[in-house]
Image (cartoon, rainbow over all chains, first blue to last red; front, side, top):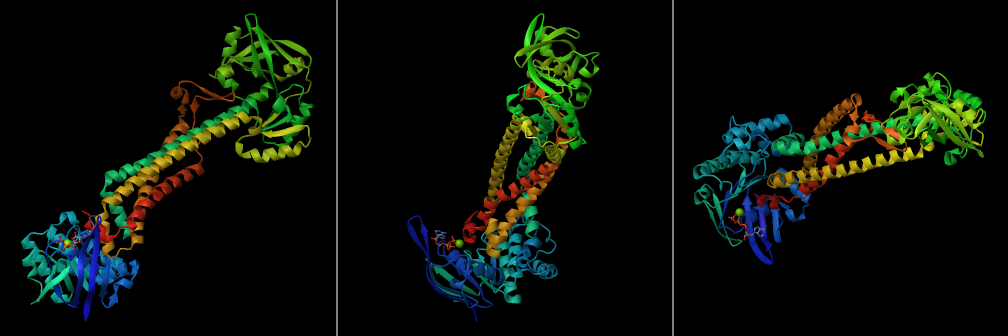
Length: 227
Length: 409
Ligand SMILES: Nc1ncnc2c1ncn2[C@@H]1O[C@H](COP(=O)(O)OP(=O)(O)OP(=O)(O)O)[C@@H](O)[C@H]1O
Ligand SMILES: [Mg+2]
């Protein structure tokens, strides 16, 4: 069963008086358990597409179904609840709340979901260990390297047991070695826990870890590879 | 969770938190100390005014208040005073004649405002003895015909203790005159009082003005202003005669009452201005702290934090800031107030001279008199201002859109 389906998705922005067509008809389906990469040159619409699928923004036209639900029929409050329960997010940088420790950041979504303390600990501690942060639970983000911060963000995204994790250039601010290590971690979580991932990247070697690659050019899907 | 986050956010930019907090804290402390001093000064003026010029409750002939005419006296003064006393048993009841006259010595003359009093009793209510610089008060004077005057008047007339002066005053068609001997000289440090006011025994005044068993005012002096209302109604009940007026000090000294009202209003206007300034400062710093965290708020909103929760987070921050600032401000204010209650504030030294309003001297040493209820109100006000000032920034935070925030760096 598909987790995401988009139909003829368009997104236009106004840049001053100029209309920019960021997406020009994207039809796309993502199945449960996929580990998929969005590739494409700068300005091709990767971030725009991820924001639409992530229920952070609404399309100019077209439809998005997430878990079978039509996003256009949902209120802002319902979309917020949907993000909280069904989606995980990893952003490019500045993902974490600076005043919270690694552990507290990782449990943030669970807190919002209202999961009791004991259960939170039970879920978050092994996850932090799994992403390689054992013993660093009490560090603040400023005491962690960029790669470690992204791992905390990945742990936070997974902790809420979402149907889908969206990651917009999660490795963009990392050196290549750290990037591959992060991708290995994500891939491991995908394989072990069946978490569905959709991430964007510029880096061809990062892309190589994906089992499906979607190429965006000028707001359209140009080609797809599966391997 | 929001509470823990709010507390940590406050600690995160500690200098800014401390600056915001100190604005509220100092504002509150100044308010408490200033109001305590103002009330202290006002209470003291009321006390002095009541002591020398009226009483908490006064009995006068109808119309005397406006006309101040010696023809409008209270007859059967002794019996009236006894009735007044039995109506308000706890009070000190004194009888006086107030009138104007001309005081002459071999080397000059001056207009004077006279208060003819019952010497031993008067000592209980007024404080002239504390201000004597030479001689004695009327109660200690060896014989009748004594007069107590101020230093400026003594200088104008060039007289000292034991010197003779002639008092002339008009009652009816004739001008009466009488010889007095200076028995005491006082100084309040206020020209209007030291150069104009004089005290003589009531009996002498009655004799020489031909006002046998008559006075212009009988006044009751209470232990504190709290008994005013019951005393006033008891006195009103005791004197149903239409030709008699029973007045409270506010009616008997309308100028003083008005002056104090205006002075308090001035203070309240200053308080309002201060409150607005503090509120603007808080609004500004909280808004700044919100705008600095746009990216962070965007992440939290994207993860599923509700706008209402973000609104509450910012308000929690303001509430904690307000609680700490109010507590410290209250402590500082109470400490300052305690100091000025015990040691007093030398107003004369600050303002470069003594002050007077409606013929009542403001003692140069002001002792604070803080009202507990106003202290509570001011503290709650400080807390409320802090939280209310954060409402707009909190609302702005709750209206942020995650996509816009995430593009922010
Ligand atoms: N908020 C916006 N307002 C106006 N134009 C926008 C906005 N966001 C994106 N665009 C435009 O839409 C197009 C697609 O942008 P998008 O950010 O989706 O590209 P991208 O593939 O993520 O690029 P990059 O690799 O640089 O992140 C670009 O031309 C961009 O300028
Ligand atoms: Mg992008």
